[in-house]
Image 1 (spheres, one colour):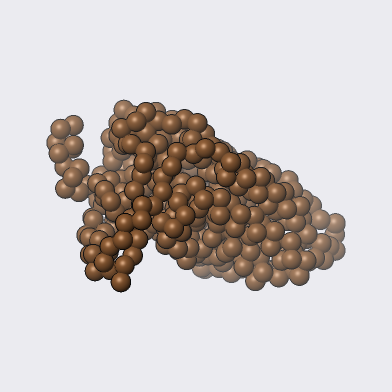
Image 2 (cartoon, rainbow, N blue to C red):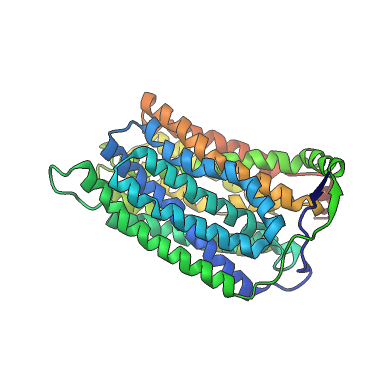
Length: 424
């Protein structure tokens, strides 16, 4: 038997950064950031409509981020078949279908249909993630790959910053007293129809744009040789430990963001309405956006490992401070975590694929699969919150940051990186 080899690129990693291509691809980062942060609005909205506890409502994250796990590897195969650009277009169109499925879900109204729509939406986002992240790393010199990813992730954070405010205004609008489930659920229809139209337009724009070609070469190898390559992948320490780091990072970030609206509405914390709390959630994601712009510059000067380890330690301390305090101090410290989350994903991603060579494409798929942490960690925190309350359930993200600090300082070091560390 034969199987297609890992993708090869026709863009040299020694070339200067291709800013036109980066600008176009950056729009993808914005869109999936916007859609991801809208889940933070859906959670309190659907919790109220269907009278769910925290464990059940966290299935929203399980459906969305579980889609990454289900579709990351198939997305890698799709890239090998049709190339990076076409995979981005397919991903956008699948996302548009997922957004449109919110209409029948609201018409029912059915929590199960909402979850199904989120799975379809996530399938498209997974395709974009698998294609766009490694694509950005080769649009310029290898030594500045982390910086480029941080810059594009900053626009991802722009989407996550805008989404809670927009979603809070459109979706969490005050319903008249005695409103039915159907009336309350209908507020999601107009926003998601608009999103579907925007995604379709963006898919057409990407299809017509002349992006640098990064496509699969049709080298066919015996199955045994491909299996050997897969075994070698699991021997890469920085990749395996990086996969766990991505799992915990995404889980921690999503868990915090998902609980903020309900957290701020608690009497001892903010004692505010859900709509007012949604505006404050934008500050959490705004911190991530500012941090990524800063991080793009900092990572040009400082070692990625040291930066990652340090921000993880600070994030852990901020979460613990919020747990041990009330009022504005509890709110301010948990919001500040967003600033220090900012450089974690692109830093872990670039360290995870460092030195993989021809295994980079498959390594990227493995790291994107680890985004399933966003499905599992928030669910675990939801179960914890149902037992000990939201305030103290934040201990789970704090533990996640401890591991990420370890990965930054020690876990990401591998044989090919030792000479660089010694030299520096």
